Length: 106
Image (cartoon, rainbow, N blue to C red; front, top):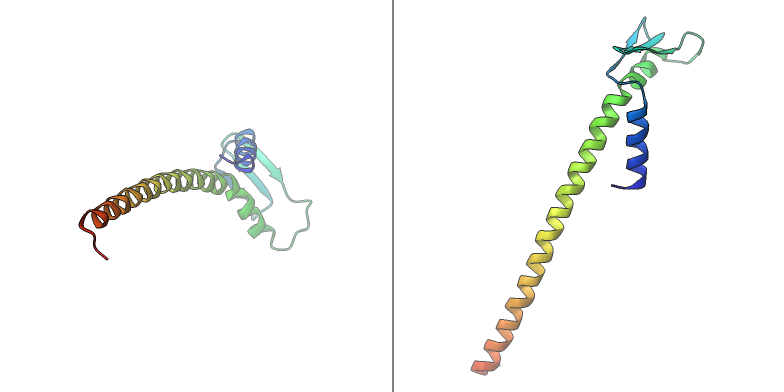
């Protein structure tokens, strides 16, 4: 796992457990563990949309981190397959060369 993904995962683990949810039209964020943030004093355009984004961040980041781990594992497995196929191609080319030399084909 990359250092960046390790750092992101560590921050996610350190945060208040999710899922988080928006309360009072984006004024508050909370989880089952308690309050997360009071956004009433932040005058942000589209506060409800931004709060919704923030509320979904832990769940979304967790899903993305797991997806990245899975895709990296699949990529590593495919690389192993390709390495094996490359070795098999080399082996078959050697056999082909030996056969051509044996039968003296042009």
